[in-house]
Length: 288
Image (cartoon, rainbow, N blue to C red; front, side, top):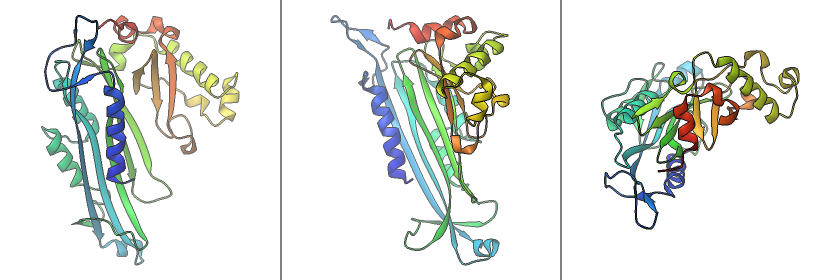
């Protein structure tokens, strides 16, 4: 995947997220005009960065003449203005989730991340303009993408995806999610989204929806379909979308790598007793 495609991914999701909104730089909150149309002004910046390296000394490590390269590609939808809401906590949470050791700003964090490519612990890295494509080579890679997957004037949900390849049969990708409540200026976490002692109810709902997804009627059948039935748990990695709470499982967490990531969509009304009232309001209150 090249950086142009990465930018295309975040740009496309940004377009979808803002179709119902008015682009601009004003910091006014959502306001209804005389004709009933509500304006919610937003501004985002799609930040992207690519750094390419040749791994010097790799031929000794691999005992052949194959050249080894490493690339870091980052593409982030960075919030600037969203209806006049305070975005500090959202920005801080994005930095902490995207980067292992974030700097004070998004630009500084991106530059620091790009200076530590995959393989840097094994080889001496030499910065190059681009990776040659005319001859066989091994290319280590790290792709980091942060993009909106759900947007409303009440809350916003981000997916932060990191995909890494550092040799072997295949790479590894994982996603994490941030749900941000504009009214409270807080991130929704498992502890503040769900009521205490609700794990059993949530687990049953997740299992039921997994069985429906795979068109089976028992956990034994689900296990035969490749899901690790005895390892299913309530993921604290979730996002809000439509009327659903979507519980996300990265590869290997409840299924083999071949199944990829698994999203279990649970309609809010199935677990209404387990949800804190604020979450129900976010999912059902369309009154701006």
